[in-house]
Length: 136
Image 1 (tube, rainbow, N blue to C red):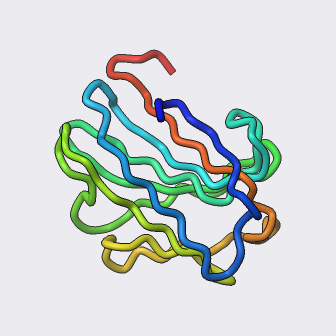
Image 2 (cartoon, rainbow, N blue to C red):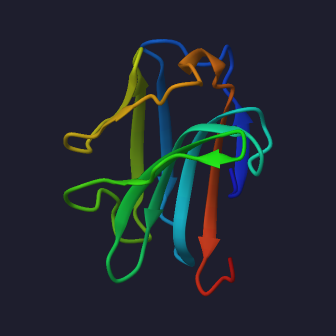
């Protein structure tokens, strides 16, 4: 699979669903994102979970949500940066619960589902990478 990539989640998400993402940190990226969303259009879809790994001198992971054209409040993951230095592979396991997502191997990382978009509405997974020195 190449990035950017969007694919449907067969049957959608339900409580207890696990999503396994086996990937490699892009060598030429300043950041990469993983989105659980309603619909295939990455630019306009409702995003229940938008997880961004910001690479560089001060790597960090942030997450947010978007419904309609309105973004929520961005939150930062506390603790050590969970992704290996490139070009090493990683495995990310996201488990859906009634009111939250948990990401395996990220200590104390439980993301509360924000109002307005139930887990059952999620139909697609999207992965993108932002190249180094890109103009946003």
